[in-house]
Image 1 (cartoon, one colour):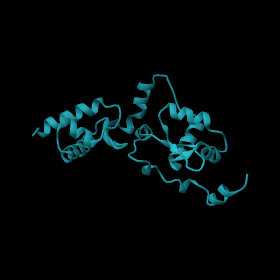
Image 2 (image 1 turned 180 degrees about the vertical axis):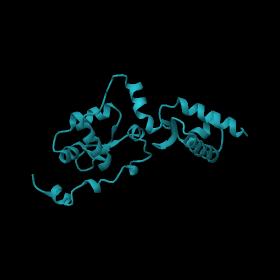
Image 3 (image 1 turned 45 degrees about the horizontal axis):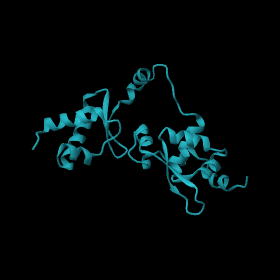
Image 4 (image 1 turned 90 degrees about the horizontal axis):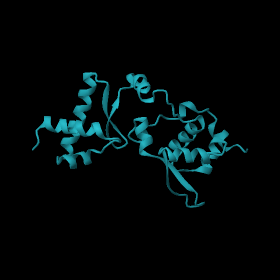
Length: 183
């Protein structure tokens, strides 16, 4: 049995090189350790990093574990990483991404109906950036269905879409009447 210090070190080394969240079961397989032991050490590492006040934290996101910079240092990291280069999503892309996130799986025509404008180009952009993906077809129409990807979850630091904030507080009281009104 590998001692705890060596296992902690091995986990830290792996987590430093991953480019997407890695599942506990995969870490356990690579380290040839029981999943429960790996899980317990990951939880302990996350608590220890937070308690020590490091500039990074270990979090569960998109079904796995990954190191993230702490939110309070985001402005410094952003300046370092971007160094004058900004590649941001347009307002149309953000709106479309929100519709997909909250209504998934959803067709392009439904997204367009909700937004009130054609979204074909925006969907292509979101697919090319890896934030949205096709996930089958609608049985009635044969139209492609879209959903968010694990990259979307990772970028938002979420484990599942269930962790998205509720929309109800931001909607008008008569939202159902507005949605059903003829155009």
